[in-house]
Image 1 (tube, rainbow, N blue to C red):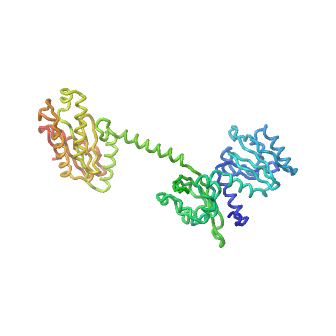
Image 2 (image 1 turned 180 degrees about the vertical axis):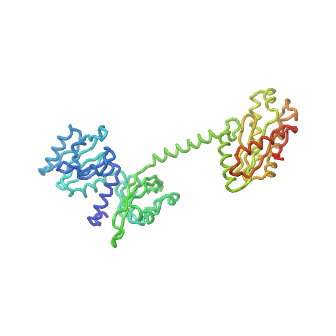
Image 3 (image 1 turned 30 degrees about the horizontal axis):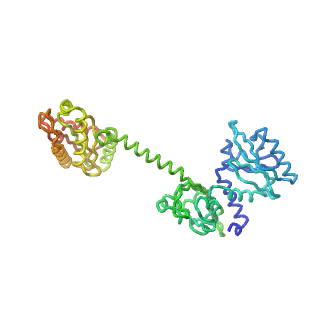
Length: 432
C-alpha cells in the first residue's frame, strides 16, 4: 500500500514519525554538524532543538568515542561503509552521560536503524526517506496515517503485535470503528479540533484487538499537508503506544484511594459517617441550599444516660448499644440524600436536605421510636427501663450572612430543651 503513494506522501509520513517519536534521534553531517534532530533528542540531552541544528556534534560526544565516529565517517566518505553499530556516549547539558547507538549505512544509499537514543550519520539528506521508513517499521509504537474522517491510510507493522491485525486488514477502515463505545465521547472528532490546531492533544482510549479484547492506547498526532490543497488535502499522522499496564496500575491505585477515602470517612464502631465527613458534607449541603433557597434540617440525637449505661454494663456492651442505635437511625432516615453521622461519644447527627421543619420533626420522632423499640435494657436510666434517646431538630433556609454553625447551635438548643423536659422526646427549635 505504501508503494502506491507519491514520494512526497511517503516523505511526509516518515518525517512526521521521526518528529513525533519519543525516541531521541539525530543525524550528523560529514561536515561535523548536526544535520537534523527530533524534539525528543534535544529534550533528552538537555538542549533546545533549534540550538542543536547546525551545531557541531563533537561537544556532545564523549571524547573517547569521537575517534571511532570520525573513522566511520571517513569510511563513509571514501565509499566503503559497513561498520557495525556501536554504543557511544552523549554528554548532556548537565554533564551526565547518555548512551546512544551510532550506525553507518550498509548500502550506498544511506539508511540506519533506530535505538533508544539513535544517532545516524548521514552524508546528505538523500538517505532520510529510507531512514524514516526503517524507523517506522522497526518501532514498537504504532505509526499510522489517517484522512480527516479517521480512515486509515497507512499503519505500521507493529499493529500485528499490539492489535493482532495485519496492516492490510486495517487499511481503509475508520479508526473510530475500533474504539471502545464508551470512549468515543471522550475523543474529539477528527474533523473539528484538528482543523484549527496542527497538534492533537495526547489522548488515551481503548481499542479493539482482532480477538475481540481491548487494549489501552495513548496517541499523539499532527496534521500534515495544506488545508487549501485541492488534491488529497490534509492527513493526520499518529503515534500510538500500548499503555494497558499503566492503566491497570492507575485503576488499581484509584480503587485503593477510593477505599482509603471511604475508610477515612467512616466511624469504625458504628459504620456511620464520622465527624470529619459530616463537616465536609454539611458545608456542601449548606452551600447547595443557599444557592437554591431550599430548607435544610439537622437533627441531633443523644442517648439518654449513656454514661450510666457504660458504668452499669461495661464499655463492651456500651459499644454494642451504640451499634444498635446507629442501625435504628439508618432505618429511620431512608432517603438517599439524608446523611447520618456519629457526632461524638453517644451523640449522632442527621442532615436532611430539602426538608422543612415539619418533615424533620417527623423523621426525628421516627428515630426516637426506633431506638425505643430496640428494647435494650437500661437499669441506670431515670426515664425508662430501656435505652431511649432525646433529639433536637432545627431547620433553616441558608443565607449568605449566616454561619452554617448557626443551624447546629439551634439543633443543640432544641436537644437541651428535650433533655430539660424529661428526655425520650424530639423537640424542634423555637426562636420565640
